[in-house]
Image (cartoon, rainbow, N blue to C red):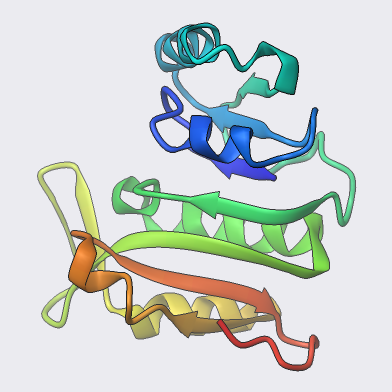
Length: 166
C-alpha cells in the first residue's frame, strides 16, 4: 500500500495494523508531519510492522518500480492540488498500480464553478473522472462516502480490468 499524503498517520496507523509486515509506504511533502508520523508509529507500538515513511517533493514516483502497489489511497490531498498536479499523479499512479489494484481519492466536489478558494480546490466529479479516463482508469463515484464525510470519493481501477466495480 502506498498512502499519498500520509500526514501524521491519522488514518495510516489503522491501515498499518491491517497489513503484512513491510507493506505500508506513506509519503508526504512535509518533514514536520513525517516526524509526527514517526511519533505515531512509536506511540502506537507499530515498529514491528516496519512501516516506511518517505519525504517527497512531487508526485512523479520516479523512484517506484512499475506495478508495485495493490492499493493507493489519498485522502484530502486533491483538495489542495491544481489539475496539473492531479494529472501528473494519475499518470504515475497508473504506472505503479498493479493491474487488479485500486486508487481511492477524495476531493472537494462542486456543482458550481470549479475554483481555488482559501487554499482549497473544488472540482466537478466529471472533471476528475474524465481526467482519470484519459490515463487509462475507470472511475466510480463512491456514493456511500458522502453522507459520512465532508468530501467526495472516487475509486480508480485500470480500465482494462473486467469487473472493476467499486
